[in-house]
Length: 365
Image (cartoon, rainbow, N blue to C red; front, top):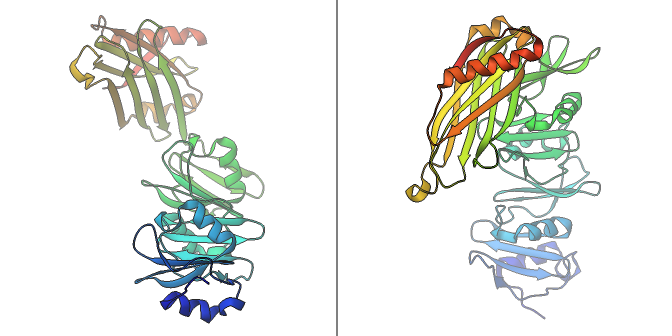
């Protein structure tokens, strides 16, 4: 029979030895692949030991999840507890150096760690309204944040916003809008009391809930996005985002890339055209290296411009109905001024509304 020695043997015997759920050993005590700890595999699970964590057993679906993540070489590290019953009596868990794995018969085994785990813990673990995790911590589709879904809601995290829960009808509305890829972005608060109901705040607005009206997103923010491209013969393209709130604060952000041989100078005009014929113009003027330039060090142009303009706030009802128009001029040399390009685009866009077109140049960078 394989040998079981030291602290691992003491843990095995304390659990009942061969008559415990672990049964007989399948391996001698071995060194873990990371060189830090020791382990024995048994018929019904494993016991892992390090000088700092001591000896702890792990078995069943929780052991299966830990194995799938990479055993002790995963971000979870070594177990800090034996598998234990949860205080609510429904599930089971092991805590690890880098997080936890929770299991119930209905949800299966899922890991939770970092700031999301800390938020869930501060709310009361599985005894909170979130209850048990339904997913491992996962990256968001936009590549910025992380999340766990739970039986009663979700926790979302980014480096800028921290970890916040969202649940119920407010979560349902946010999901229907496109989660974090909606104009609201990520939650910046937990759901909280508000006059007549509940509210969650997000990066670019809020969702409020009342018994009578249900969940309604705020009209505090207008978000426009456009993918920018040139004719096939000119290899310059990218995207822009324009976000405006009802106080007149704005963000004009974008990315342009030159994938071709020559150096290219571009002028990009962006206009938010309102039904009244007022066009709010944003612009970017920059040179992009091509492969003709040694190493092509400046093939990309990324920018984020922020500011405030009371014209936007004073005409907010119209701004909420605005449409985004764009025009890109890209040559080896710039042949026309950027301000004139924006003004021309305003005039062309205004014809859709039968208006003369009034340019308000907001952010010529």
